[in-house]
Image 1 (cartoon, rainbow, N blue to C red):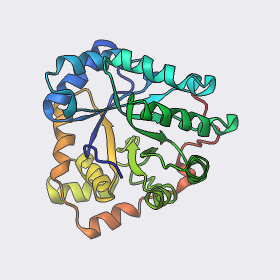
Image 2 (image 1 turned 30 degrees about the horizontal axis):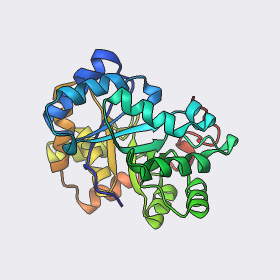
Image 3 (image 1 turned 60 degrees about the vertical axis):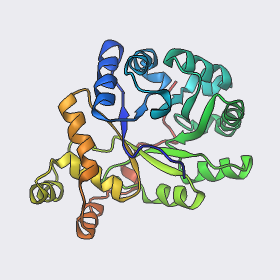
Image 4 (image 1 turned 120 degrees about the vertical axis):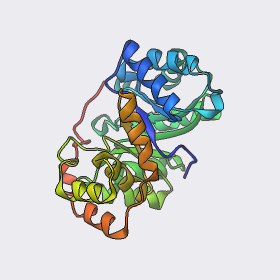
Length: 265
């Protein structure tokens, strides 16, 4: 498991000045993990914020992701170098395969090429996103190395237990994208009752559930007040009964997006 900040600032679908402003306000609020992706088309805007924020580079943890077209072309080093140029950095903290694209059967080769970029000093850690247990185990078997991170769709209604068990067994840190769900989770009586009892916002309760699972959520907001609220979730302590009640919201793996058929380029 790698050492990284406990809460990430997501940037999709922000672009241009909106992305720059959101990252600047997030860093000012206290976020230290900034998450982007080549396919978001906002790396340059995020890079402007990284350059203007005034923090030493070593205080920031910057993640970006390999887009499908680069995954398919096999030009992994070129993709890393383009992301570094866009972000204005000389090294990434974390580089992820964005989607496994299993139908094309190139994710093991992509991971091997990313390891070479790590060994060349361009990337500190290499990982994956949206990988299932079968993809993870194949990567480990064929390369001898486990991804540092697997970033997956996850919220209390989509707890992703099979993937998380595989992550834990293989020593892969779990990050979550869309950690607040699509709205229905925040309106759940289970969440709102806990929030009322703790005098906290529903989003803080849901983020605290991620922390209780040992998961690093990546949450996007361009609103400075909401960014502050989300960060304050780090101070929320749920009881074991709270966590158990939230766990019971899980709808199972069938509710997740089907990564076997997802195609993103």
